[in-house]
Length: 195
Image (cartoon, rainbow, N blue to C red):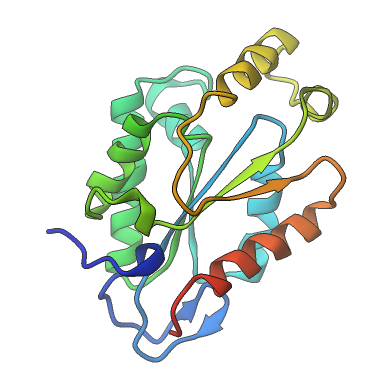
């Protein structure tokens, strides 16, 4: 079943849950893609958004990779991203907003998520935020499980990422995680029709 998608991924599911942090009476569950460079703060910001948006389902693609492949660095993209889309669809079918957290650097990866979520292949209709940082910042923030070489190669890949129409880019080098989380919320609320 394809979802009826309006501006920024709204769907026709009715609910009295929160609307990405706002009360809604006849809600349309929404999918948000929280993309970004390695080390830009996706997981940290998602943790803060979880507190602000308790009714929202957060889908960390690294967790799916770990479940399917036993390690977050291993990936069969089609399987992993389709599973992220299935989880997003289940959340939205239940009337909850969903946030998928992953770089999603290629159009194909984004399509896997959207197709399984039941969203027509019009990527301009899905809200997306790209968190960016310099390589220097990413290396300073790095997680123990990733080597400098992996971080450097990923940052080169991000330079050629598929850019979504209307995607907001937030430079996180000089911002605190709470400031970034507030900017993400402002973007989603500003570009979403009234709930």
